[in-house]
Length: 269
Image (cartoon, rainbow, N blue to C red; front, side):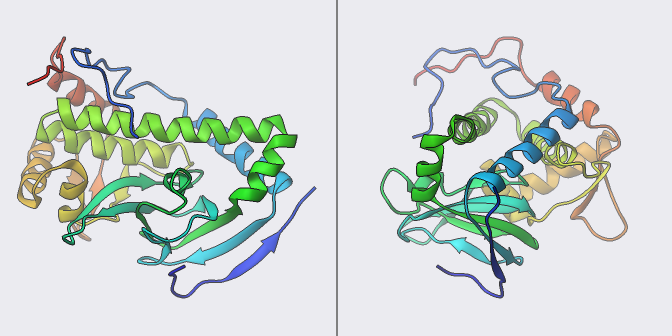
């Protein structure tokens, strides 16, 4: 397992589903629902408490650039974020890298390793993070005896599948400006659901990484951000262009909705 400076202590208390051809992409499909941030925050806190009570947890403090696992390593553990932000990256045989996921507090890492017994991507911290390491074998044994834990595991897997589907739909149906707006909306709402401020966010990704994640070039991302700023949907702070001001997330949502045709279908070419 590849990591840099880290601390470790133990605590022990008591295939991506694609839309079928000709399916209409709706607002509900793309995940644009008014989710109560407090409800999500309470769900995350409850999930973390349940894990603490049910299984042995190994905690690891990691820093920006550290990896908790790499593609090809044997699968033994699942990881849950207690704090921090992670990205997951797939690498092709010719060395090209693709950002395939963003993960915040309460999210799980490592599900991709279950099927083949090896992790399929790299999980890399984008800032200082507290990561909980759970033995998959021990987790399954505990889940067999505790229905609530089994339900939590299934719910977490389902949420990952849904998030991947929503990302694919946005990639296939939105314009470049709307894709960038949706990326900022997702980042802001993820922070809001974890009790953090959303009027000013610090992106932990470069423009090139954002473009890689959204299927766009660096230049296209930069132009899209400039156009969003010209519409007063976002702004930039004096500190740097990674610090984004979002006066009103609902205005971003309205812009995304306005860019989506009333009925757009996916057709086979």
